[in-house]
Length: 505
Image (cartoon, rainbow, N blue to C red; front, side):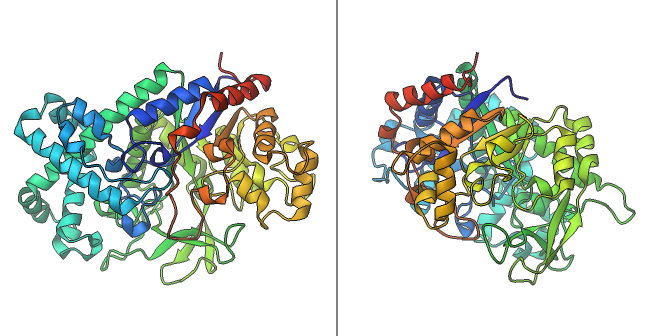
């Protein structure tokens, strides 16, 4: 999967610099690709880029669609270049923060900009490319109708809509498609803009030797076009449309009560014990779509394919659940037949059993090693670089779910014994820049790929953390101001890349 020893950076698109309150697919993203190339990187890892909802704190892991793109990432400057906006339309951009995303304000600004662009589009800018996009994009009609209905019913989840359209009765679908023709076309237009800009960015990355690592959560949100459009694929109550059982994980490193995510679980088999063909077809479409947009994908909560934590929907926490066998190797064999090669990174963190490891290794998927987990026990800790059994893995200083390395080291989450082990392992000393110690540990390991969150390259503290698992507010907001991405920083990072033989050929 990897063409030698390589490295990359982890930064979600929303965290990019830019004047529009949130990172976009425009100049800020291209500048970051330039920074990646200048610093000797080969990969850029991002978080899921689906449509986000304020109801879920705009989490990229609770999207309204597994296929549709996040309109907040559409770059207004590129719309000006396309003739869909005029320069005057950007004359009153709010005074957004460089350091944090105010999602409510950004959503309002983005909607105004996109509606203005849509009016121009309706007035004569419609193209054959748009019509071809609508005709060939299989998921688009359902998503656009779902999004229009979501607005029509004031943001209520689909199971609270009128019964006929919630159940997708054919007459109701036809009636609402006609009644909401204009809003449906608007959402089709938004997706057309998103994927046109995405393709430009992906081409720019490829031209500069940068491969994109995407991220897909194993589960999807209950209130999503996917569940509404594929109800037989999910464990739902036939009368209410609500899940009978939901996903999560038992108590672990992050939470004493576990994590009750609330996503509906999949129906992997029909009543006769055969593969649920509708679900397998949906997954094949999802993987194909992902591989058309990025070069590799990280599957979040990979262990759920071996066995998953089932929680009754009426349980308030994840404590009272049970492990249920997943579809296992057979699922990936079937996906390979339908999709082709599967360049997948398995997120294999948390409670991992020998059975999960065997599935990962039999499939040849690289797993993940987190250095922040390496120092809380003894010399046998599996996350210590000297214990990596194979180079077929990806090492991280931390991920979006961890504190920054500096924040972790300065907090009481790292006890004194852990800090002492860090200093000894790194041959370092108190007061030295611990984030560079961790970067060098990652780079010097046998792991084929080392990925460093940008916050750790910059040496930022806990105030720049991206997400705190088991909390539902205040996450996903960190942004990087442009002045931090300096030529000096790129040169220092590249020096380490060269020293540890991770420079692309």
